[in-house]
Every structure is written in C-alpha cells, then in structure tokens.
Image 1 (cartoon, rainbow, N blue to C red):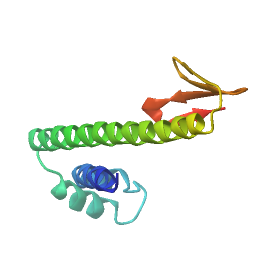
Image 2 (cartoon, helix red, strand yellow):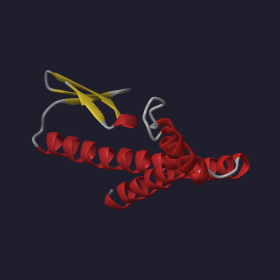
Image 3 (cartoon, one colour):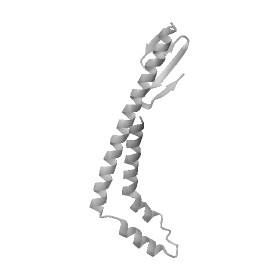
Image 4 (cartoon, rainbow, N blue to C red):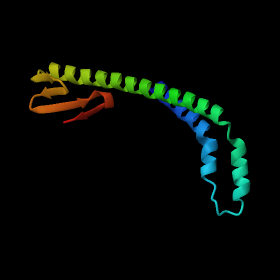
Length: 121
C-alpha cells in the first residue's frame, strides 16, 4: 500500500501546484500597504483561464485515479485481514456464521464496511 500512498501524495502535490497561484491571490490582504504589488505579482503567476482549466482537469483526473487505486488496495488488504481472522476462528473451532455485512463468531457479531476498511463489534 506504500506505493499507492505515494501515488496519492504525488496526485495531491500535482493538484497543489495547479491551485497554488490561485491561492496566492486569495491570501493578499486588501488593506495591506503592499496589496497592489502583491496582487500584481500573484496575477503574473496565474496562467490563462483555458490553460488553468486544462491543468486543473488533469490534476483532478489524476487525483480521482489515485483515490480509486488507493481505495481498491485498501479493500484488498482488509479482505486479506478478514480472511486471516476467519481462518483463525475456524482453526480454534469457534462457531461462526457469515452474514451479508460481516461475521458472527460465537456470541460476537462483527459488521464490516469493506469499502472503508472499517469493522464494528
């Protein structure tokens, strides 16, 4: 999952680079003595609307792909942990029953949200 985290970090960094010039404009205080100079400098860093829109769409697409890839890897890792947990309960010969959102092992019911990699007892 470390490579997916890297992919997610890369996508966030790319997104940050795209919006950074825009954020520079929003951080200028209108009543500051150097507000006009700061705004002029920030405006020079802004690309045209069309170029900005294209870069933003590319960054957004990259971020969406990274989120989906990370979520998919998280679910796979969670399923492996769940399978190990169930296998251990079977080896201990505990009574277990699969339910549509988890397992009942002995007197304890486990509910899983696999898409979020979460468990509740």
